[in-house]
Image 1 (cartoon, rainbow, N blue to C red):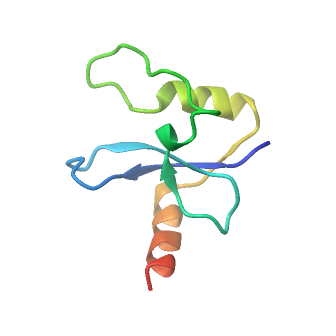
Image 2: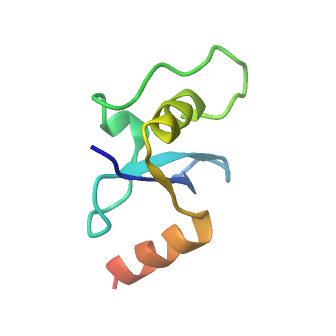
Image 3: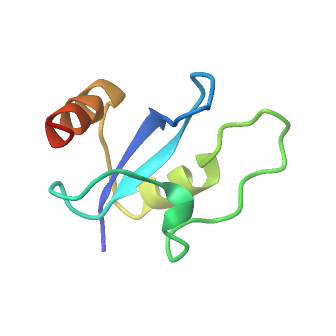
Length: 80
């Protein structure tokens, strides 16, 4: 199964972005750790990107990367 990925900020993350996933365009974005069937452990790099290893795995599997700005547009529409 393929889905969509985007790098989004989370509440309280001080602007740091982590990988978010969704399985279909009509579903909400969720942090990658909410999908244990798709996520893999992060690399042990201090201050490394959260979700980078998962991103690499899913890109190889054909998942679509959605630009952060476009993903934010869908967040704004769904919160109305």
